[in-house]
Length: 387
Image (cartoon, rainbow, N blue to C red; front, top):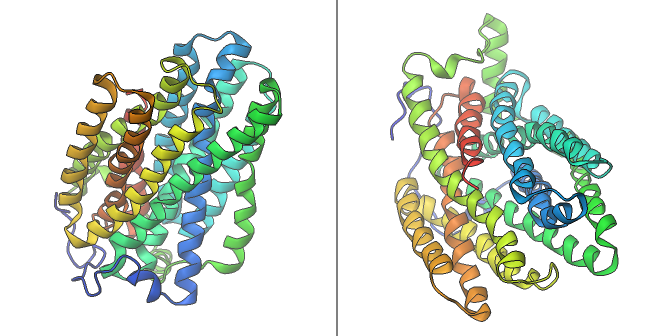
């Protein structure tokens, strides 16, 4: 896939220099490292907030007598709302800045996670999760663009891909919280505490306000727009030569998002219903999946710069399909199922390490937030229909 914008306006790409995974981090200055940890932390906490619901869905079904199909609707609605939130969040990132938008979206989804903790019925939970999804989508749009612009071009794949590994950390925090709370607190209370913990990301905003600066390329572009009165329009990514880029990038994002969310929604439920494992007993299986995801993100980040974004997508897609077929079609013992959790997480997640850098390089600076936010989250919204 090739961007149709003028090369002079697209973000710079460069040949690889140091090919080691952590070269980008060693070469960062203090400001760049702060940006990296802010983006990785935001994505980790975003992931924690999102993964809470798949982990407590069984408890909600039992307590409120909701059928599984209806209960799954809350997860679908969250992803659909995130598609809208990603587009709007990306647009705001182009209009008011990457850092400010990141702060607003983190506050948004943190607040509505707290709202989820106090709802009284499933309809209220459904609405709260839908509104939370707006901030959930916007956070990725702002954070991915921020990291992609802050890092030097030759390290972009590794840096943005490593930020993606924060999702596995957040998922792990959600599973750890579940294991602790459901071991010591009655289920009818534990699930509410899970959502309350999801409000903690709001604390990251204080760090962002003090330590993270707007990328120079974005600040300069926005200053120029203000000077000449040329502000990006919400629909501009659907016009002229940019339209083809938007369509193709959205289709690519749909493929990777659909498979990933089908897996992450299905596995926790599969372990407790089909395998008859308790919430606590399933933790080890999810841990194998999460560890595989974390390492997959890091290896994928390295490969994104080493072999290219497209080769990464092809390799990890084939690997994910093969492992999913093994996981679902063969009569496996629980021990083998546990072992397969690692490669399942590795291939299903490592694919994403190249997505952020790939989308960053498709759009000019003035439309990068809008374009990247829309394409990634359009795929997420359509992917919501897969589970």
